[in-house]
Image: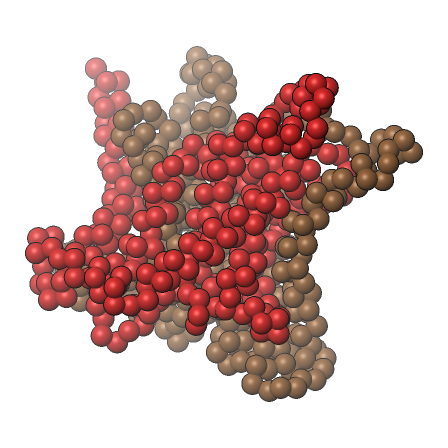
Amino acid sequence: MNAKIRRTSVSVVRNTLLTLYALFALFPIFWMVLITFKSDSEMYTTTFLFHPTLHNYKEVLLRTDYFQAFLDNIIVSSGAVLVSVLVGVPAAYALARYKFKGKEDLAFTILSFKFAPEILVILPLFMVYQALGIYDTYFGLIWVYQLITMPLLIWVVRGYFEDINVEIEQAAQLDGYPWHSVFLKILLPLIKPGLVAAGLLAFIFAWNSFTFPLLLSGFRIETVTVASLKYIASDTVHYGQMAVAATVAALPEVILALLIQKHLVRGLSFGAVKG
Amino acid sequence: MQAGLINSDTNFSKKPFLVKARPYLIMTPALLITIGILYPFFTAIFYSLTNYSFRATTFRFVGLKNWTQMFMEPEFWHAILVTGKYALATTGSEMLLGLGIALLLSKESKFTRLLRVLLIFPLMIAPVIATIIWQLMTNNSVGILEKFLNLFGVYNFPWASSAKTALLTATLIDVWVYAPFVILLILAGLQSLPKSPFEAAKIDGGSAWFTFRTLTLPMLKPFMYIALIFRLMASLQEFAIIFALTKGGPGNTLMNLSITGYTTGFAYLKFGESLPYVLTLWLIIYLISRKLVAKWLLVQKTAGGN
């Protein structure tokens, strides 16, 4: 009897604590989406019950250049991931399969890019970009985003290559397949789920990047993370529109994240934790 | 070293140059792209010895002046303090909360399975956007937290606008975004633990606390180190949350090294003077990360039982 009471009370405490954390983690998102439908006049007077309107969405998406920022964000983020996949996947393969001098040093150098303070990279880069004429261009942003997307892709994809038994490769080679068809027809299909997940996570990281687009672009090209700042700074505050800006910037990421749940831990830890 | 590496190192004389060079050739594009972007990093050291300014067209060599000036600046020591306080407050809370929630979530039930999916939402949201969400939440005229605190008789809680509560507010946002990161990593660790030592401990009648301290925690250590490394390195250089929240204010309350470097370089346009700040930050991060990575490799070995 006593043990049963104890077990029940433990599970009650457990679920209460988890519920509290869930509220903390999820309520802000729920509330943000909720007030996107609230008009400015009802913002001060109502809490949960009000007359929903799409006015805020119309204002932000049709009357400002926020939609353009959304497109810009898609262009630079997917461009960055594309470049990283094209050059990073072969590099990951080399790190996984070949034994060569300085291998681990190279791998750690690539990883260290992730930990370099962004602001330290930006200060000198700002001058270089001005001099080269790539400041505020898609090219410039896609290039600097490599510091975000490349280490992630190389480290995670390297792990997926290492998971494949090398005998599969050797058997194919013995059968007379040239190296490129071994790579394209046998290896790539095997790592595809992991590669897609790593690519999507890299896309999310690039999408969320703030310091790079803030300081290396901002006039012709603007990402949503930078464009959303205007809603904080403006004097006449339209809270509903601020919420729309945040929602439009956040929701694509949340949806993408749901697609890659299984691979998420592995990606987030750069392959260190094989979740 | 795993078995079955393609060995391009042995049989040197027999292999043609192109075969030996193949891994390097494959890696060259990736390295060129990333090193191209890091070249400015090396010039940063040079420019930190000049009086380069975005306002003037010429600059000259000033030796260590920027560095000595920085060390005499009270703002610098203040920035070091803020950097440390912010990193400690955020990483500390995230590790504790992360461990606690991960332990609670490790029990299988419908609720915990659902929660494991939902809690990744905040983590995927850009820190700047998260800051906007929390500015809406903590806004004193329309924010829901104000209405909530009113129920307890607290009115106009100052949040980010007061020097006393600004760090707390920034920490809250940081924890909201990144605690799920720590939870996910530790949870993955918990789920990978072998069953048999725990069954043995149960048979031996060890208390829950004893099992946790002597079995669970040591085996979780590698996972906790990974989480700690990632979070500490990022929180030491946090820019987005603080910038979007107060730009370092009120006054200089939240001016960490990143924000001070940015302000000196881009707001005051004193480029040469701003570099010692960010180079110092880099040095701190570099030294700490080396120590922690070495420690991680060590605990990984111990936990693996080798």
